[in-house]
Length: 171
Image (cartoon, helix red, strand yellow):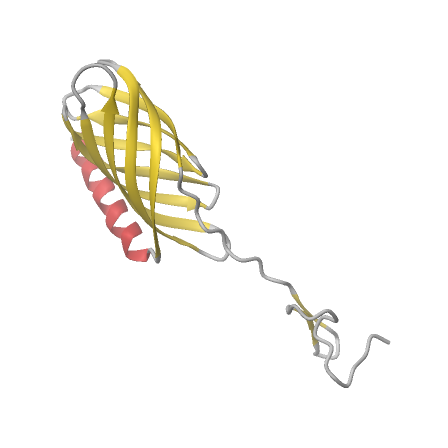
């Protein structure tokens, strides 16, 4: 029953986040994976579609391919996740499939770092911590607009004298 709820929540998060997105970027990464069955490194290749609001709120969806390397056979998995948070750190929730079958995944995703875990439907688990190349575009800063008592606005533009017009001077 718990896995069914996790599956539904992850699917809804991915669909809702992907519908709001307006920028797409590719990335590569390197994770250290640890868990009940093994530990080691995996390379990550993925793409993220996201939207950053003017106040920094961020939503998106991420598709990534994870390939383990080192001694033994190469193992792989693919993940589809939804992300939400701000432009500094986002929570991540989703689903994946790998050599051990289907799993739910969750974690935190920041500027050039990530941490999280995978919970397999067969009861196994693994955790990961990693670095990645993705840098989210931060919202442009907005200059404040100040309304004077007489109704005129000052500031809010890039001219050296604020919003002073041709007939006005600094004195």
